[in-house]
Amino acid sequence: MRCAVLLKSALIALLAATPLTVSAAAAKCDRLIATGGSDNPPFLWRDPQNPKRLVGANADLLKKITDSLDLKLELLYTGDASKALEQVRSGRVDVLADALLDPEELAYLDFIHPSIVSLQMSAWVRNDPGFLYSSRNELMGRSGTSVVTTRFDRAFERYAKENLRLRSAPDLGDAIKKLLAGHADYVLHERYSTVALAGKLGMLGDIQRLEPPVSSRGLHFAVAHDSACNGPWLRGQLAIKMTELRAAGVPEQLLVENLERWKQQSNPASKPQR
Figure (cartoon, rainbow, N blue to C red):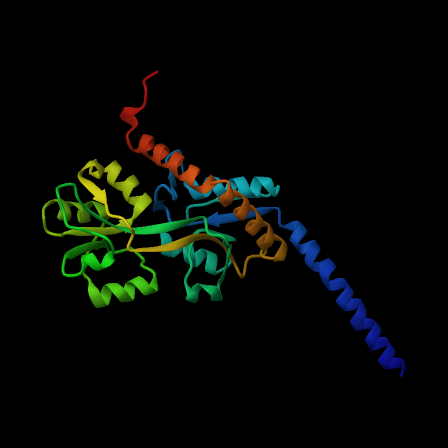
């Protein structure tokens, strides 16, 4: 009987101590390390002044959140999008700042809701009189181009394989050149990144975006399962802050600001002379 009493007391003590241990561990996490794709303006790109860092709308948004939580933030360059994802999957980096919701990634990442923004995959065409367009079904039978690194959501990828004639291009510049030369009828690419990259190439004035987009998907912050900082408090606070910022229109505001920032960095000659 005495052994049973002692065992019961030990279990009660252990259960009582567990929340304190978790809280103590969480309290020690006063810094977040984040990463993401390094060539996706206006969302994220390498800082020209410090190539080890990432800047952009997502970086600014995450900084607003961590500042409000009294957390230090380091947003580091770790390679291209696939390498950045691997660093977060492994737990070596805490947060992926440009995560696309994918069922496979749920095994490694906790996605923060709501999303940062809804990415709009759009069809872009030449400025000359084109074809009537009311939905993606209007693209059937026409030749299209997409960038080889573009990640479509699964539903649209299935739709495209069954219904569209798509060829791959190594980058957006090459895809737009094919479009302007008449070798394609449209280019599929995300709205904001097209404005940023085509603007840098001096091609934005030669193309126009068709409405509505062919598909949309959320862009999220995601916390690694194996991050030492991952816990209910952090996930809850990130969700609360994202809800507040989305309601205030802050992500869209930061995207507009960073489109201009990217434009100025891409065209230093356009800056006023001192």
